[in-house]
Image (cartoon, rainbow, N blue to C red; front, side, top):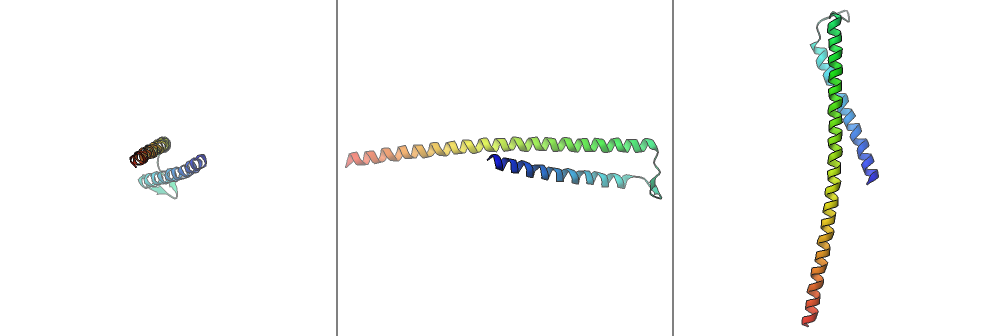
Length: 115
């Protein structure tokens, strides 16, 4: 299970990084379309707007990182719950099998006693 868990962690990390990159790209495209007109490749925004834009970008990235961290912790918690549930189900199955053996054993003993 430990090897499977590590491969799932690696896969989860790759998937989350892919989502993160897509979100960052989506935010960049959205903010670029909101930018004002440009003259010969240079933005005509004042310096304070540029700093505000950078601050907003950093905030968005921090929010995305926070969301990914939260998702990662939720997935880890779900994995832990899955393992606990699997152990519970295996334990129940073992107990059911034991009770069946005891029940059928008692039935066989009664049948032998009657003959």
